[in-house]
Image (tube, rainbow, N blue to C red):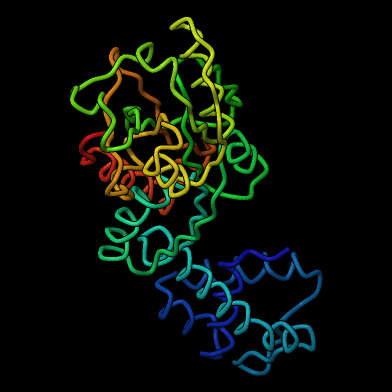
Length: 301
């Protein structure tokens, strides 16, 4: 209903007591002030001023608007300051959803860099595995999702979602330290056809079964768990072996287990996902930049 410029001019006219004084303060001509006040009176549908000799007197409507004008301008000023703080990255909130090994490796380093350079930007972290984490992004429950996919897995990415590749995470075979194949630098999956296996999360299990099928065997899966510590503890006790992403071994490595790369190499793609329209939000773009920087410096993935 109101033009904010007219409210500001009205407030100055009331404060200074005349159109001419308000014009001098605001840097306008007096006719410009007069035109703005006429436009404001048309908007409210009633006169705001009456002449009292050579001065101005507020009407009842003018008195009412005057009582609200300060609050309106203060609210607008506060809104402008908050918007400015958001665009200048002095504040802001970014909700990130990540799978556990990313939460333990990429996220802490990225958030430490963010806290050092932009302490006012707040990151809220939750955990979930894909594809559920991608669904949470689409539902608006997070702003950035970190997820992984495998070469043979078709990922149905909605049109409104943008993928930001972070790194290729090499898969390793996790063996007990006394296993004879630890003497090799690389291991062929087919050489492990007779082993007992420990399978991980559903998406990792699907990829694992696919790769075994390509090598002509069906693995004997003795245990299934998505807890990386449990997987390594089972391997350490000789109860089975496992296929594990290198990212996990960056932060968690049991002293009685050894990782060996597969030949040919097997990798998963780790990416950040964000709604395309959110790429222009400064805080979201900043978090993505920090994640890319940390991912680029990861060694052995």
